[in-house]
Amino acid sequence: MKTPLRLHRSFVIVGFVAALTLGACSSAAAPTANSQPAASDVGGGGSSGDPGTGIGGPIDPAPVDPGNGQAALVVAKPGQLNLRALHAALLEVSVDGRRVLVKATWWSGVQPCNVLDSVKVQRSGPDIAVTLIEGTSDLNAMCIEIAQQRATIVDLGELEPGTYTISSPGGDARPVTVTIS
Image (cartoon, rainbow, N blue to C red; front, side, top):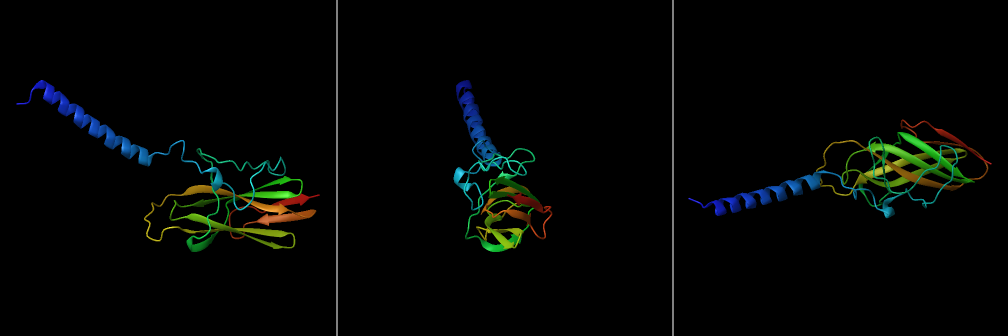
């Protein structure tokens, strides 16, 4: 029969092992304050600066720890595999003088199965089409099927004076009209 001291030591060891196991499981599953994208992961090919308070309000390209209803701000990571076109669910435009930034928001799956590769911008006269290109970084990855809202900032640069329509053809985003003076 074990003495009370040995019995107590056994309970302490079992409790310690259980606490370590539960701590490891919960930290792997729960997001942390550091789960936001790094500053280098922000944007969509454009520079990050304060675009001012133009149409649609300013777009803040700073890292975002997404809360309920907020999209995670990501940057394109070229070189993904199995590329496919995606279409934005929402387009928001910000104008600072003649410089135009577009925040494109869409729904996607988890990484590494769904990673933004690039953003294709096609211009035909006053019409500007924004298409998101997504792929996978690991062909053998097994990812859960859960939707995540993501956004990226696309810098259209300085546009000549005129009226432009920015859209994501085939998507749910309403086209946005912007006038540059």
